[in-house]
Length: 176
Image (cartoon, rainbow, N blue to C red; front, side, top):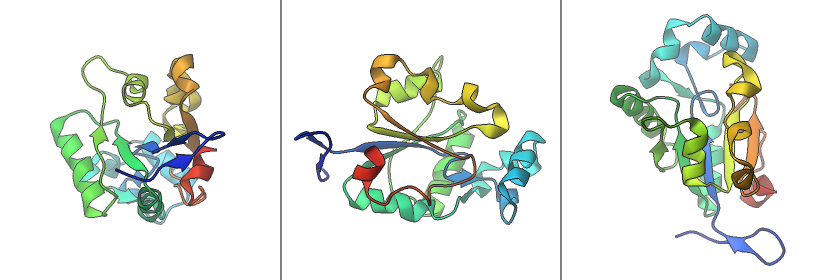
């Protein structure tokens, strides 16, 4: 199991963190060495490396950041926009290749939307990017989640391709 954390008042819990993969902790290989605005343009213009999921790379120090949270007892889950077996295996391969902390890779099942995946898992913390390259807030997951679930989930939004480096190392601070 993991450690428990004091959240509000005297409540304690093991924190479950759900992290979106593409754009939040992973980016296409063609993005390496480019500024964020160029990377977003590459996605919008369908750069050929965008669909080569087996060649994706971590954004910044996301592996280390997530590892710190896991060492503190957080249960890590990942969610991907990929749906085919080949694409899912490519994302799994990439997570393993770069030694991201182990955790299930979730995805949309038949007739599911991203909000359904989040509501099915009910994480304490949901980390996603701002979806700038694909339409912004209207494409984000958290705004689509039902009100009751929103009250139980802390939303953390990062800039697309901006990574997690700026987020707190302590998961209790991330939750608050």
